[in-house]
Amino acid sequence: VADSGPGNQLAGGLATRLATGLAAAFPADLLRTSDADRARYETDHRRRYHGRALGVALPRTTDDVSRLLAWCNERGVGVVPQGGNTGYCGGATPDASGTQLVLCLERMNRVRSVDAPNLSMTAEAGCLLADVQAAAAGAGCFFPLELGSAGSCQLGGNLATNAGGLNVLRYGMTRSLVLGIEAVLPDGRVYEGLRALRKDNTGYDLRSLLVGSEGTLGVITAATLRLWPARRSTATAFVALPSPAAALALLQLLRGRCDDRLESFELLPRIALELVRRHVPGTASPFAEAPPWSVLCELASPAIEPLGELLQSVLADALAAGIASDAVLATSGSQRLALWAVRENVPEAQKRGGPGLRHDISVPVALIPRFVEEAGAELARRVPNATLVGYGHLGDGNLHFNLNWFAGAAPGEVEAAELPVRRYVHDLVAAYGGSFSAEHGVGQSKREELARYGSPVGLATMRALKRAFDPNGIMNPGKVL
Ligand SMILES: Cc1cc2nc3c(=O)[nH]c(=O)nc-3n(C[C@H](O)[C@H](O)[C@H](O)COP(=O)(O)OP(=O)(O)OC[C@H]3O[C@@H](n4cnc5c(N)ncnc54)[C@H](O)[C@@H]3O)c2cc1C
Image (cartoon, rainbow, N blue to C red; front, top):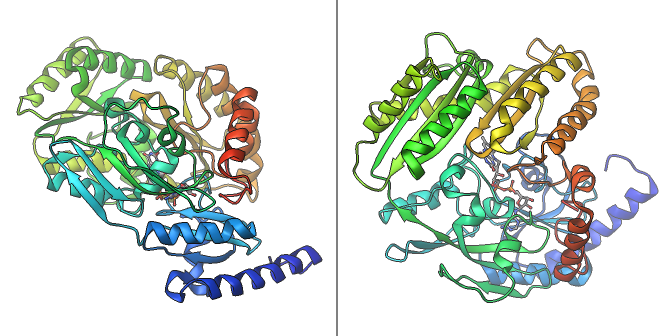
């Protein structure tokens, strides 16, 4: 945009004409157009992606969204849906042309209904995830999606990215938590699919298609969610282990003995605990000295049952078998939160620790120990100045396999390493039958990866679906495909 070449002058002229047309067609209250008002919607939360929007639309109703999309569709104006803007792949950031409209759902934040006997609730896309959880809890129910960003991400963003998080082991990804969807298609028609049914085999599943579509097929305006009975018992422990192989053995032991009471199983290397201790003051350390590896695990149940005793007995067996070397069990709600804070502060501690590269990978769970060993050794050889911080949702076979330069990096060092390291990690992931994007999506940052690793037949089918939904290509241009 700073460039004043003929292409940009052309885009600038178009942007001015579109802005005038938009302002004439919609009330001022619906739009934000000044530089200052647009700024926070034009950059992602990590400040990696920057764009310039034609304007920011803040609809209050599904009908507002419908009229905005119809207007954009008639003129071929690109629309970038945005929720809480906490995504990791630049999916909610407009391009730099000044001709794309950011459509943020933050004002559509009403919980429309909670139906406790049916274990379901209907909420608008702009609800904060934390508010959805609280509304479910207020009705004696439980909505199990749990992310570190719950206080700022929105239900629409969770659905559009098919978010994963901390309870996937027991409840699945966001897609498996949704019964129905309301969405506005690019031409402004409203798909009214807010059904609260467990069984509904009536043709193609548009709900599943819209979930995970990252704003490229339409705008999700509301959803009917599955709820579970409130949890009445929990047991949480931090367990010290010698290796990822031992963590896998513990996972098997817990599954065998606790069945689906096991809800979370998070793996952390020593460096992750050290980083939290160093960079997030006030976070309690579970162990006097950080062990080589540790696991944060949690059991939960809607029944009142002695889960603490169950967990203690499994961990005693793990200690006796040499699988674990130490364990800390939470004995109160506040201790439980303190243990979780260690896990949840890892991304922040890592960010404060130094510049880095991120990979959100998954491989079949049983292959995690081999993958960590092979990739860890090779990365230490290829990028000796960087430290591997591979942590995350071991129970789902999903690790955030990041590298950081804690001693600082020479100018351009991280940028120079980015592509070769990504290629090495993602090629290895592919060889293990894994995914280069386990839970964060594709957005703009992993579009080339999808083109490289996606199945040709799958990609062709995705393009055909995109054309069928969005023949004018207005929805989130330049993302995913
Ligand atoms: C501290 C932290 C922890 C996190 N932990 C996790 C984690 O454990 N697991 C995980 O999966 N992610 C995690 N994330 C990433 C992020 O929070 C999720 O991807 C979240 O689902 C994004 O929601 P959002 O409302 O911020 O969406 P945004 O970032 O605003 O948008 C994400 C994508 O969805 C599209 N979109 C948004 N709203 C709509 C809509 N209404 N209709 C259609 N498309 C829409 C956007 O165009 C974009 O492509 C974390 C992020 C942070 C900062």
